[in-house]
Image (cartoon, rainbow, N blue to C red; front, top):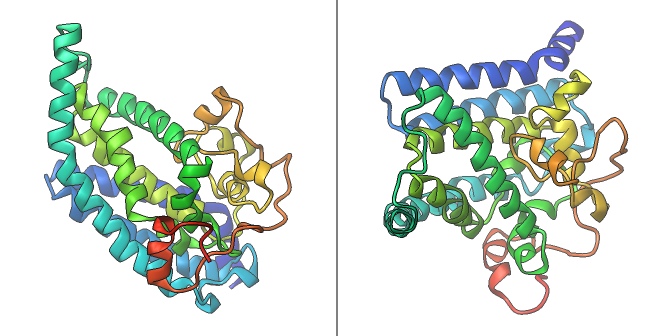
Length: 293
C-alpha cells in the first residue's frame, strides 16, 4: 500500500490531466457528442480521485465518505449543474447571434482568427475564456455575487465532490459572460468544449483531498490543488485570491495570486456565513431576503 500511496502522491495530477486531454482529443476526433464526452470525463475523473483520496488523503478528517454533505454535493452536480448547462445551451445561440450582429455592424470585419490552425484557435480560446471566467469569478466574491457563490465555499471540508457544488444560476452566468462573447466573435464550439473539459478535470483534482507532490513552478502554470485550496481558505484575504480555474496567469497579472509555498492553509469554509444544511434550502437560499440560515 505504501508503494501505491507514493505513486498517487507523485503521479495522480499528471495522470488526470494527461488522460483527460487524451480522452477529449479522442472524442473530438471521433465526432462524439460533446455533452456525452464531458459527462464521461467528469464521472471517470471523479471516481479515480475519490478512490485516491481514501488511499492517500491530504487530511483524513476531510473524507467524502464521512461527510454528511456529500449527498448534497452529488445532487448539486447531477441536478443544478445539468439544469444550468441546459439553460445555458438554450440561451447561447440566440444571445451570441445578437451580439455577433451588433459587433459586425460596429467593426465591419471578422474578429476571430478563423485562418489559424484549430489547435491554435483552441489555445487562444482557452486563454481568453479563462480570463473572462476569472472576472466572472471575482464578481461572485462581491456582496451580490456571494449570495450564489457561498454554496460552493461554505463547507469546512474540501474533497473531489465539492467541485460540482455550484448553483445553477452560477453555471448560467458562465455561458452569459464567457461563452456568449466567444461565440459572438466567431470562436468555434471546440473552444467552449475544451475550456469546459479543462475546468472539469482540473476542478475535480483541484478540489481533491489527495496528498500530492508537485513541482513548485507548476502552481504558476496550471491550477493545482495546492493553489485552489488557498482559494477555499476560511481567511477571507486568501479566499479572495487564486480565482482562475485553469491558468494562474490571470491571477498573476491582476495581483490576486497566492503562492502555496508562501501561505499556510489553516482551514476551509466560511466562518461568518452559515449555510442551510438541506439540499432544497441550499438551492433557494440566494433568492431569500437577508442572510441564508
